[in-house]
Image (cartoon, rainbow, N blue to C red):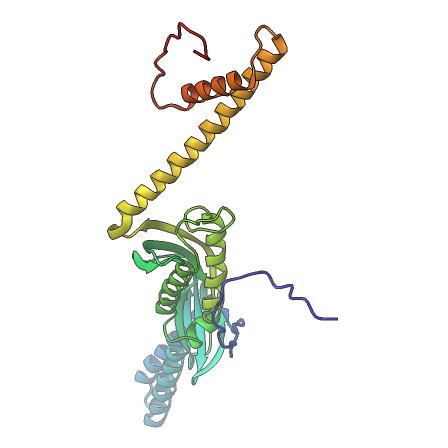
Length: 312
């Protein structure tokens, strides 16, 4: 039995490489205790140096000064591991180039002083593309722009999987918007087809799917995407406006004709029901013609008095 493809229809998206590193929590302790111990160490080191000044023995003085200096240096070195993490921020911790985890807990935290800590924002951000000029599915030049709401979901991927995640999101957003624009027409010629102007909700959903596939490698989560500008290019805008106006006129005329035909049908049925005048086929045709002229005309009908009969 052949397998059926249950995957929903999505735009063609590039296949990004799988992530080599994933975020995990770095080992850290509360910074308050570390700060207190560091200050105590500095006080002890300073006290030993002060005591050494009042000691008569040269050997004891040298030993106390050496111990005091070592204690002070170790305290300063230990306090170098303190980090202040604000809400909406994280610290990516590396030890000799190796990823050792991410600190997301806000407040004062302490980690190994030998590690390097890279600050990265996890707040929600907006990125709005410039107005892009592309050709739609029918080859018509159009202008469009989009805004994307996103945030960093995996700090390890954002740091190590791409060179610059801000530039990566910007470039991939523009690429996705261009790809969506060439896949669909501005206005669909057939009623069942999707168009950028007539099916904005469906198109933006497809844009979000493609954006997610493109930036997932950078550990970025797409929250929302919307078109902020959509129009024909200036060189064809007037021609397309005339086409839209012509389509609107045709649709209005069709509705007027449908309504007029219904009114004529109702009039003939009422006359036949009341049976106050007998109309042959030729008189019915004349009546239908006159009613359609009155109901479908752009101007008020001018009555014509007939002093004879229909056959003379």
